[in-house]
Length: 108
Length: 430
Image 1 (cartoon, rainbow over the protein chains, first blue to last red):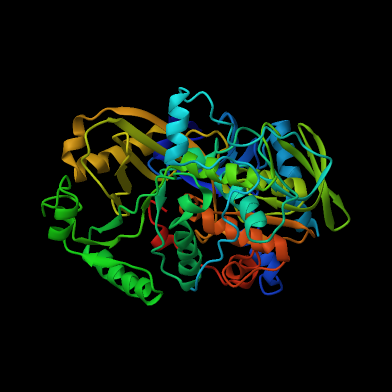
Image 2 (image 1 turned 90 degrees about the vertical axis):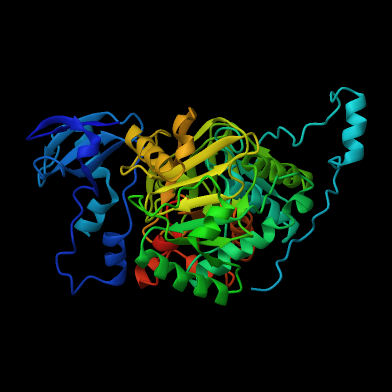
């Protein structure tokens, strides 16, 4: 079981939380202009790394706030918890953010 | 849905057939004279086709490449030992009662191959058509189930709706009292569904594929997929580089890792899926019963263990283990529905990493890279499809074009929007 440090309520059992999947996904800025491929990439295709992963959690049975977690998908170690909308401070987590294939799509 | 092409089913190249006579002969020698079932192959410099992933689906793909398409210059690369991943971790349930026509065609194709597969492979897969029962716990669920049964039967697949009294007769240990929090309102039953011995499926396909001359290479982890422009040319592995004209990736939970090596993306999330067995007890249930509402399914192995499963853990993981609340949840449901199991002890629990897809349907597809094919996204329910999956994937690789069964499961459905949403039929014991 994961022990997740909610930034507002402190460490709580995983069963109090709802999972929100990949963090930092950006909805196409101009929805009408986005083609089928762009929508498919945004809606369905995932960043599914083996190792450090940036994901969203919500403290559903507590403060009900969303926040981001940098967690290793092999060891389950939580490296950093940070606010929704922010980038992680941890260097490895930042590298994971930069290496995500979505960044290239966003720039392009 | 016509007759399936089983291809060449004879062991022709030297594997000694298993038979009653062979068993008797070996018994005289204290069973010390059985030959190994497949060679311990070392990788050659190149192959026509490389299959990455030595689970049931990968081995079946290799087998049908040879048996149906005559392609024997094939290697199966497995990073651990064959059948050591999800093939050995699933709860062995087989059925074909899916809602949509596309799924019905695929899973029924597979079920038809299961029927007779032990004979095809000359390997006892302990395929047991003990039936699969799915429970309804509300009026709405029962109505939806009736609609689904009609759809299933229109596709020529057996399914019947059952009353609580009929269910009680089939499964005497179930509690059908109306006082339950989630009472049993009815269910639907596929008699041709059932279970099979999962290890035997891997071993049977491996032995038969090996007999065709296919190299099964274990302890061989792929570390890179090599490309020349828009085409694959081979792989780098922990046992050296191997060239190939075509590469089929069948790595379930690790599909995302392979996709990243090839420079493509997939609509796949890797999640832990847990299951457990009880201590062995005398036979109490001779069918498979699943329930979506209370989220648990149960069967009994031939050894006497109750086999229980539920849904995936909520978070992405590659750890082959999950969280305890999922286990607690499935045990709560088991005790509610089958009160006699309350004092049966849990023998062991385990987890596998499954490749979940947004529409709960698999991906059997070419990719934007020439010669690179993916067979993944089976999520929580791939075991039942092992023969059919291998059969249509071999066809895709051999002809470089999907057949009618595989075509709807191509990757482009996540751009066209033609999803095959089977979350309902997939249910808990997908």
